[in-house]
Length: 265
Image (cartoon, rainbow, N blue to C red; front, top):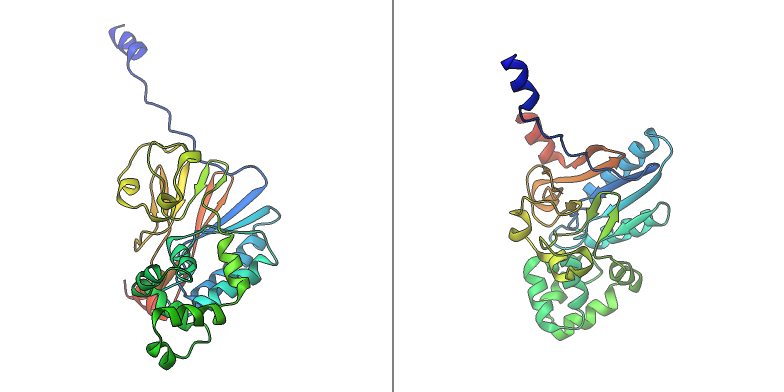
């Protein structure tokens, strides 16, 4: 009798929170920071196209989380590949902090100076600018040479980058969000640059936030966020997250060094 009484009034375990979902009939692939690694991006394009076809019919959207450019060897090629992919499937681009610097560097010498220190040199030299001539140019001369070398279609593609994208229970941003601030009041600077304050926050954001910007060797899947920047330009790994209903899966492109490391591990 006492045991039955205790069972009646014993605290119950809280129900697990429902897993985040995308709307029925939709499928989403989100790709982390590419940073000029056209080789890895091309692998992932092929992998996503094959995976999407194998999974059957759906309204599929690809979200590029930003930072297509800088640091890696072929930012121009990455932008061209992204534009070509967007011509044959639904693709949405988020503006990253490196896109912001790249675009602003055409008109602001101080931004250009900062941009060059954080991978911008590699971006500029992926366009038809001679490396020897590059070394002789002043910053204003370099700005003029950039205007001549970078196609307007590339700049228009980057300028169209969005600040945030919502699909079902997921919020896609480049860097993160400021905790406790409604989405409509978030500042673009935070969405593209925030780091520690967002990463350290363990509370609910109202969405599961899918982001890049901060490198981790492996995907960081937390209750309130999923970080998929696996450091393509330094680790040789470019990662995509797939979403359908409440399901999640990952696709990773690897270069030869990363594959050898994985085999040795």
